Image 1 (cartoon, rainbow, N blue to C red):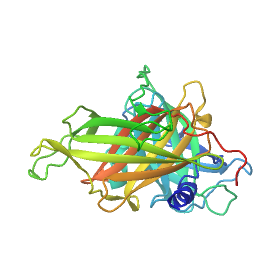
Image 2: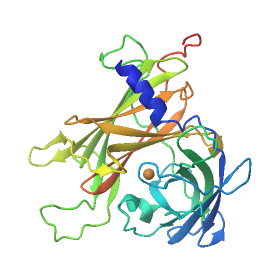
Image 3: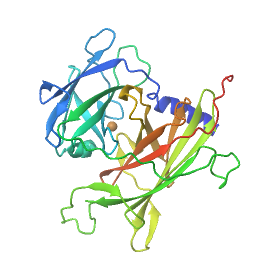
Image 4: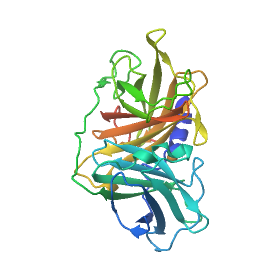
Length: 341
Ligand SMILES: [Cu+2]
């Protein structure tokens, strides 16, 4: 029963990974139709969407997770990730946001760090159009922009993971294909509740070691399904308590984008493929009362097997949006069942 609920939740919450976009976008940066930008220079971005078949402007949208547009900017080497929001101007169908500048919008905390170094960036706009034929609640429009200058790319590294490959593996909570990755993160610029008069330095989260502010553990569980597998991802975040010299579970999350919980963006990593062909999913996770883990449910139609992914898990605590990146190679737990209903 739990699996059935999870399956329905997955179909409802993650309709994007298999939806074909029927929208195309015109991007204007500082009033100019362009896909070239100056890194680290503040700029106003405007988006106008058209239907690919009728070529008509699309003007009616509804908010999704409290916002008109969810905008993701990911550097081509996956070293940077920004999740911000653009606002719809009346019934014009034009969305606007300012990037590379401090934002007063609490949902756009990452705007200041959107495009900080030269290179190519993926731009993923997620909107929910009304009154047109569509296949999912939201549609994702994919394009790229180039930040001027000498490109600097970092190597993509897979996080070390304990991955079991057998159904009879130990420990028993593991099942085939499941992953378990533990990472530590250091944080700068966290508000200091004991010294509120202090101006905190710029907020940032960097890879860390044991004893740094957060320990984050990502685990997964697969359940054999029809036409694919149901995957549950569990994110357990603990915070360093210096009085105990130990980590304690982080259970107090802020409400963010209409829910108490987190967001997870999955993007396949494959430099040989075009952006249009990369597997993408936007999942929403809930943290049950007093429980230390957030659960994200995804129905994989057997397309994840053998692919590399980076997943950015996001939650909000103490007023700050935290992003924890994880990278892994996905190995299918089970073969897809063909003849089932
Ligand atoms: Cu968003």
